[in-house]
Image (cartoon, rainbow, N blue to C red; front, side, top):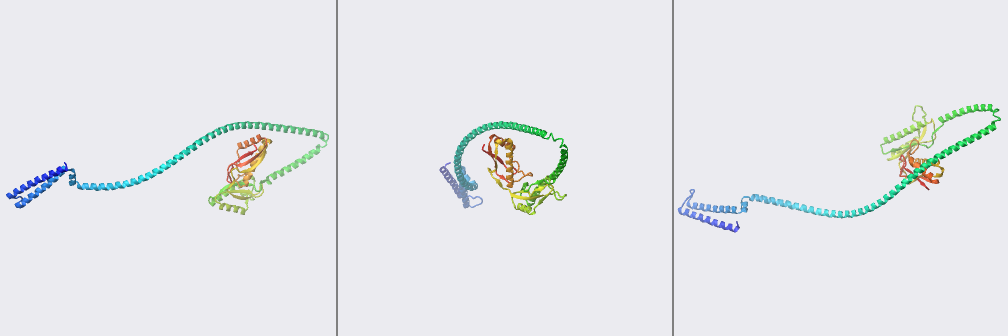
Length: 440
């Protein structure tokens, strides 16, 4: 219902109700009626009041029936106020959330800008990597081609090597057989010449000197027996079992351990040296004493002091102080060296010129002498050693054989250098060494 129509209806209804009330009031006044025991004057006033109440009630009733908003305003105003307050609180919360989300949006926008910059940089890096990959693939193809060529040449070289090895073995066998035959023939020739000479020269005087020869043989036998006895005595009681300054044993001591453990390591090394000396024939001055070593106290204490003051690995070596004879105590001195690099990769340790035309046996002898030089050089720089005074395996049998074959095939003078393949330290058990041959 429209607002204007509602006002008109209410006005008309109010007028009608007022008119009816007024007419009732007038009739009550004229007839001087009374209700509830009241005087007519007050009865008229009560009727007027009731008429006003009816007018107000009808007005509210009509408004309530005509408009939902009026009903809500009359009967649900408290709930409406509470809802409005809740809505206002929600609105403030939403505004706070909008502020937080706005800040987050700005942060996301900044992150997006940063990611976009990184994306562009990554694209540039991808382009660069793709270009390098293409170039690397090209280089790989070249390397693979060279590798195939190298493998082909390697197979050819291995074939020639095997053939050369077979030829060398066959030639060596023939050479040895020829040498044996020559030696046999020369022995037979000398024997025949001696026989002929002896028969020719001694035929006349053989019978006359027979008795003298028997006497000489008897005297010679006695002399030989005496010499043999002296030789046997010398071999047992006059043999030099350790030479002066000979390295008996050298091992690594870890000085980073507690002092008691360092002392235990030294004791273990000395017990090994004592066992080596006893095995070779050194003996204590007392029969009941199994310890056959004698020390210079100052030398030993100085070495132990150096070990206690060190922090890393140290090389502890035991040497024969002088020539030691069979049956005597072994007088030793000790040396300590810090573990350090003694050769850098590529350094020439020793070198030797070997004549390949001298034959396989002579080349082998010279290479063995070169290995002894390497051993002596490393020992001289303080490297560890075993009970035989060796520094370990210097090269494999196959490398050694290959070197012999190459030198013999050259049939000329070859300078052979023992070169450090990697850095060599005193604590290494076996030095990484390779042979480099100049002139092949």
